[in-house]
Image 1 (cartoon, rainbow, N blue to C red):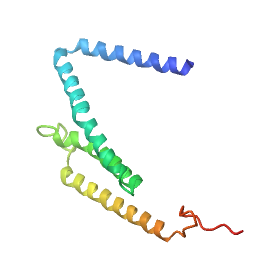
Image 2 (image 1 turned 90 degrees about the vertical axis):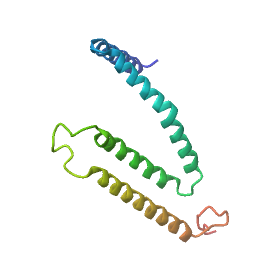
Image 3 (image 1 turned 180 degrees about the horizontal axis):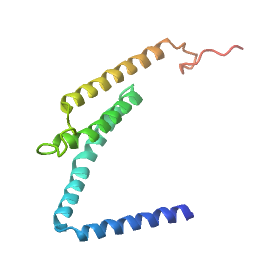
Image 4 (image 1 turned 180 degrees about the vertical axis):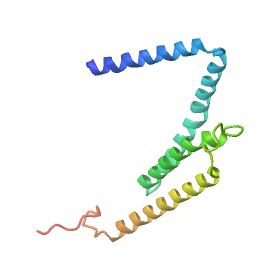
Length: 144
């Protein structure tokens, strides 16, 4: 095993120890463990199967790279925005949510969808304009 792997493994063990230390210092460590268990069940029972199903559907599409990029972008936007939107009550800082972020998130997701659709159509037009060689691989005939 390489030294870098030992260093990274050691750092991982150190961080696990720090997390355990903080967990033990909590006034109610049971609540944290319930939250972590719920996150695990949500991830493994809902999120991972959903991502796999979407991946299987995307694999059948001709514009696979464009759709994949749009889904990654949309997922990142939702992951960053959703915790602020779902937070109960008013934010502690009034300037934290000065705009209608729910509506703005939908507008940005719509813009991502429009850009992805335009990119997929552009890629399709480009592929139709390429001259086809004898093998049908999109390469023109080489001069003899």
